[in-house]
Structures are given as structure tokens and as C-alpha cells.
Length: 361
Image 1 (cartoon, one colour):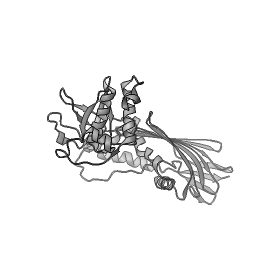
Image 2 (cartoon, one colour):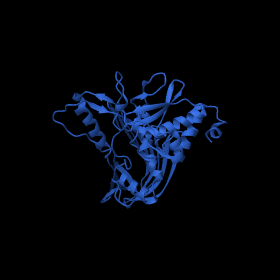
Image 3 (cartoon, one colour):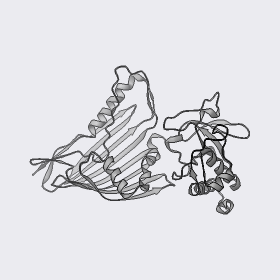
């Protein structure tokens, strides 16, 4: 069956993709802690018959199918988890790992597969096994390699929204949210939820908006680009505050970042940001006829060793344009810089709450 599946495909990576998708569609993951203390995989033939296996069994099974298809691959041991833990270069051993993945050589790079996932795109290993030293097992001698690093700007979320502000202080909005990299992994699971759970997800995600109602939504999951797109239509009755002849509202309606690190009197550890990310937001507000801007925030650009923040607001007629960029950089910083990092995050939190004041003419 595998030979028939890939017989007309010349590119080894395209062959591997077909095999990987076959495994995803025809097996499921279970935990099996047997066989030399949980180290030995169950035979590939047994996985083929039972249609399930653990990380060892499913990886071994996928490798066996790839061998039939004529594609080279390597059984690989990794310490998996959101915390990045490397194998020891000088004394690597199987005991240093808790998970098995598969590596497929592609020119001078390695394509990594997590064979336990039935939903993730081919070659996308997410923050469970990314950017860490792993042990690949070869007949001619094993070696240490590093898995894919999803760089800061690749972990991208772009939100675009058209927002109508009404005289009753309510808003109506149509949004488009695109995510890539690790941010894709944070959101693409929504498409598998029930309608009720999707609506609850958005109400919680935008919990800063009182009385939010989700009118409609749609999803596009492009597994080739590793890009998830959400189209969402919402309204809220009392987004702005009405005070006499004034309407007061925060232009950052849909992506406020309120994270502020804890205060420490005596910081003992360096700062470690394991994964950076880039958020970009563009909102266009249509304000009610008969109102004009009385006050709005000034444009801001902040650049630090930890990242960048930009806020731009412009107006023309009854249209207000709001642009925001937040780049958080991964890296390790000395403990002496902790207060500077905390100040940076405090400024972001404060600026994201900035308000615009409209006055009835």
C-alpha cells in the first residue's frame, strides 16, 4: 500500500509527507511502558495490525514505512516539554530523553516529525521538542543535533479589524487573525472545538470586553504554510464608556498584553526568555457622526534589548487608524537587567490600556 501511495512521487520529502499523513490518519497514540524499561519499541508489524502505539512504536513504524518508500530517516531521542532541555554533548545517553521523534535528512537540514501527533502539519514540531540538542540513532554511530528553532519573528500573529463604534457606546467588528510558528500552535486547535466551545474560547480570550457576543466565525488551516486564519464577527453593547457628551474607549480592543513580571527584592537568577514572538495589530475605527476627537494618545516607539513596542494612531474625518507592534526577543539576560525588563513590560501593559476621548459636537 505504501509503495502504491508514493510510487509517482520523486521527491523524498514529498514521499515522507505522504507516509506521515498516512500514519496520522491510520494510527493513534497510547502510552506503553513495557520493553526494557520502556525503551524498546513494539514491532512495526504490531503497530500496523493494532493501529496504535506509543512514541517509540509509532516512530519505529513510520521509519519502517519510510524504509519501504526508499526514504532515509533516523530514530531520535529527545527531552520533550515546553522547557528546553539539551542532551549532554560529552556523555549522551538514552536516559536523558523522555520522547522519540524522527529526523529526515533534507540536503543540509533535518526535517523533524513527531509521529504521535494526529493533527500537526508535516515538519512542525512546536514548542514540545523545538530548539534543543537531541540524540539521533545511526547504524554508523549516533550523534547530537539540534532541532528546529522557531525564531522570534516567525512566531507571528497579525490581527486586522474593522470596528464600528456606535453612539450607544457599543462596537461591531469583523476581525481577521493570522498566526504562524509557535503562535499557530497556540490557536489552530480551535477548529476542532464545538460551536459552543469556540464561542466560550473567544469570550474568555477577549475577557476584557464586557458583554462580548460572537456573531460568526470561520477558520482556514493551511498546513503547508503552517498558517491558521480566523475570521470572527463580534459585537459588544458597552465597549466604550459614556460620560455626558463624551465617549471614552481603548483603541486596543483585541490584543491587550497585561503581563508584568513579579517584583523581586533580590533577584538571584538571570532572565531567560526561551521563545520570542511578534504581534502586529491594525484596527480601523469608524466613529459616530456628530463626534470629534478631544484627546488621543501620542505615537510611541520603544526599543530595548528585550524587544520593541510601537503604537501609531492617526485620524481623518470619522476614521481612526490604530497600529501596534510588539516584538519580544528570546535570549538570556543578566539578573541585573531584571528591573529594566520589568519596566519594559509595565510600559507595554500601560500603553495597551491607552484611551481615546470623543466629544459630541
